[in-house]
Image (tube, rainbow, N blue to C red; front, side, top):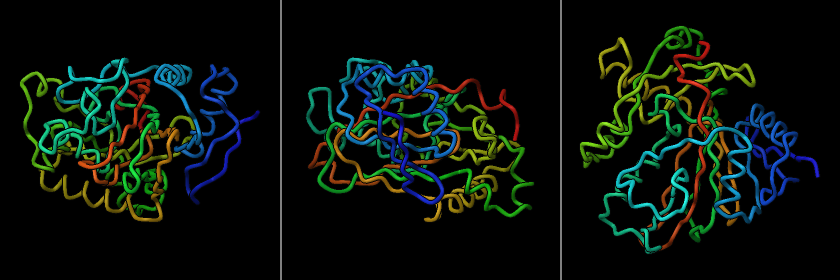
Length: 294
């Protein structure tokens, strides 16, 4: 069956059917998916009852997997693939994380608007998040279209921000929640990296803001001034007309383009219900400063 797309939002996001992710993805299908991502930036593949190996294979069919995860207590990993991110509230024994568990405190940062791996020198391309277990209510994921947000900015603001560089780190985002419990090894791993604030999306040619809660300073600006500007841009970019909220169903796979979207998790009763989602992340082609400017 051909890939069939049904828009879920006026600006971006489409449901994608007609492909079975349990089977190897042909090169022609992969090319179709890339074109759909260039247009919609977020694709929802419902009813995909895949396992970890099949999810990893789908990622490899579309690009290069990120080789490392950026988490605290990285050695406490319950999944068999080191490259697969465990987006859950479960311990290595499958039980709910304790309310005061360091990993739970760190993971609360996922509720902030962010772009995956913007804190890495070479950031993320696509993220592919698959739902194995979902809570009875809450736990949705919201996405915001940074291309539409850029288009809606006043020309004066565009001129002010288009050449700016921001420094990103997990330490910056978690500091907003008061989390600072890092080992020395983690502090080195999470050292800040520079990224462009405005990017041109190579597949579509559209210009996009590149925002994230991981931003901690703007190069060439006093920190308070720069961060006030970033806060204003995030408030602008996450207005409701730019946002899609995804209510998870078991076996949904949602893929998004981190170069031109923001996302955040919404709360649920994580001390009561399990939520088991697993993410495969593709690496972008190069650091943003090495890519063509907008």
